[in-house]
Image (cartoon, rainbow over all chains, first blue to last red; front, side, top):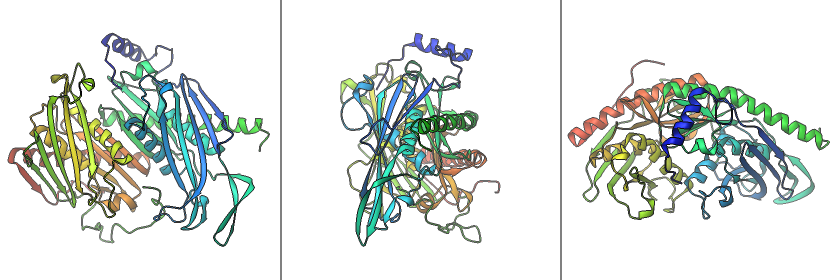
Length: 275
Length: 252
């Protein structure tokens, strides 16, 4: 994962940031075009892909019945996992998840959990015994820069499309209906990752810009504009003022992304002839 | 770690404003740092913060074990954070958990901005963190102790890194969260900073906070780090330093 810093390229990136116009003509706080596709995998209970510029990620949700955790006997279980598949980048090695993949999955997990995205109590079938376990599997298919924001959007989108069988309980027996129902979505936590090179803060780095990003801060906000998860990553430092600015950006951009997601989702539902 | 956060109401602060261990909202746990306690490493430190107890050993800068990990322009930093099986209530399997892998990464990234890495190209600095007993705030205590161990190893640094978790418990801002406050509180914000540079090098957050609550907590965390930094400096000067009942100035 190491890149030799080639000073000339860094200077070019810094020069474009200092002008406030990026090499692809975007402003510092513009995302590249965001494109959603819903329910792309029919064998999954829910799925969505997100493209942000060259970044292409796919999230599949599989639901199965299992035992709840002892400390939360009447709640379903949400498990987020991520795979950086080798075809997405020459920097991704085949093998078990490395620290980058684990960090990403754990941050998305915290965003969804503390952002109260889904109602876990709604996933309880028999307290202490049987609950729905939701496996959220993130696949990075093409690495084009901003992985955190693309995967958090895709994970939430996949959960929004997820359908689980209606269950009937008789004693300790659970039978599954043909009929399926959606998950209860409580809120739409959205992550915005602010990147820093030199003195400049900006959003959605291209792969080239990412090579020189010194530090990033991923901020999840909920629809009440509260903060629900934060992760600073990469070996760099931020001042108090930079953090305050990042929080403001996350609040306003998060709201924009939330509307984009909901718009795309509603359009998709309409096109499916749904409500 | 799986849910449970909002499901259990626990009284963690009593009518007199005292926390379960008798502290005020703005009071740090008793803190003791010992320097150079291990014989075979280049630098070491022990931190005891409340009942959290951690040993840190540092090797390097040394020749890299594997040549292919060498960086041509700076030292490579590796960090391993592990919890002993007996450090927590229920035995922890010694196999590395996903949490430990993530924490090793964020701890390394919190220390790296302070280390002058370009003085030692093609070498490795190894930081080994062993949590012997965990009672909340282990990632922060690890960072506090590791930067002391790095200094003990004679590795040139821009500043020490001090760390402290802050958060919201029973609707109230508190500093230096214990394990129960972390588990049952509304929000937990671990912060590390270089106190003399006023730069933040670790920042994570779990839970729900308004923007104002969050910015106030960051200020409290930076103030707490300054006080912890005094203990770090005294420990480096004297070999060992203990501070009890550190209370931040100001009120709620």
